[in-house]
Each structure stands twice: as structure tokens, then as C-alpha cells.
Image (tube, rainbow, N blue to C red; front, side):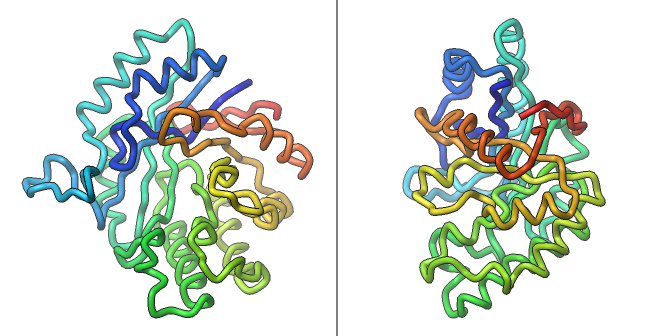
Length: 276
């Protein structure tokens, strides 16, 4: 079964990939199911109906998903392609502790199938610009990142999987931070995730970013399995043509080699297990 459960379209501020093109491409690739998971990043981005003027970064609007248009187009895509592919309704919540009430409100408003919970910013500071890392030691910004994630999973429960769990490593100019130094905090996070019936994703974008290890790392994946974790999703984190579905099948084999037996798809926030 060929699926992609981390997919962005032009409803994300950092993508110009039309939803119809995404789905048409997925059908041409022989994909069985995909979940559109466009960005919502409260704290650094506004909703389109916020009543304020939307700021732009270069030509990109610093805005979250336009929810009414997003839901309407998804409904049309499901109708148009119902005989060719299963399409699920998802979003990616780039959450921070102080934004939890906004995500709770959004979750209650729409019927989601699947939600990725990611940490994209801490203290409203971005990783990719190095604003968050500035003025901190490697130890400080790594520990603060996982501290925010731990606080989130303790308090916020309306999600399906943790996205690209060690994202901070992608933007760490100091190189890989020793896993053993953050292992206790990561283990605590994973224990909560497992006890809550949630999961993690294997994000195949590590290939295109030129990373030397998977996202999350092989060490995190092994720890998750050792702790009894079973819920896994596979996603390309695609934003443009050529990224959709990339390395999904290759990384499925990688998971099998690590001892995992299943991956999951979702409907109405409920996982279904499929053999890898």
C-alpha cells in the first residue's frame, strides 16, 4: 500500500503546489491514499480572517490555512477523485505551549481525519532563520526544544502523531548533538505519546535535506520501538512537485529492518494498521 501522510499544498504559506495538481500527481504515481496536512502556526502567523493586515515574507503570506476554502476544495477533490484515490483531511499544527487554546478551538471547529503535532518554533522564534538558536549554546537550544515538546504532549491531546520529532537537528549548525544527552527527555515524551494512544511519523524529507540520518533519528525510532511504540505514519513533507511520495517505499523497508511491522492511516482521528 502506497500512502503519503505529510503533504502540503498552496494552502501552506511556503508552498505554491495546487491541491488538484498534488492529487493528480499522486494518482499518476499509483498512490492508494494521501492526507493533505497544510500548515497552521499560531504565534508567528495569522488566520486569514483575523481582521488584521496579513504580513508577507518575500512573496509568501505569513498566514495559516484559509480553512473555509481549504475544506471546500478538499470536499471537491474527494468527490472528483473518489474512484481513484482515498483523500484524508489533515493539518499540521506547529504548536507552542502558549498557543494551545487556539488549536483547541480550531480542532473543535472542523472534522479532521489526522493531525500532525510539530514544534516549528519556540518562543515565537524560528529555527530555520537561526533566531531561536541565537545567543544559546548547542545544549541550551536542544534542551529547550525538547522541553517545549514535552510540555506540549503533557497538555495537548488532540493530535495523531508527532511530526519530524528531531526537527531541530535539521537546523543545527554545530552538527549532531549527542543523543544520550537528550535521551531521558525524549524517552519521557515517547512514553506519554504511547500511553495517550498517539504515534510518531517517519518524515522522508531527510533525504532531500542531505541529512546523514533519518527524521526522527534511527536512535529515536529504536527507542520508540523499545518502549512499545507501534503507531507510525509515513510522510514526504512535500511542498513542490518531485517531492510528493519521495522515498516512502525505501523508508518503509528501513522501518522493517528496525523491527517495525506496521504503518498507520487515519480516518476521523482513528488509526488503521497496515503491514509495512
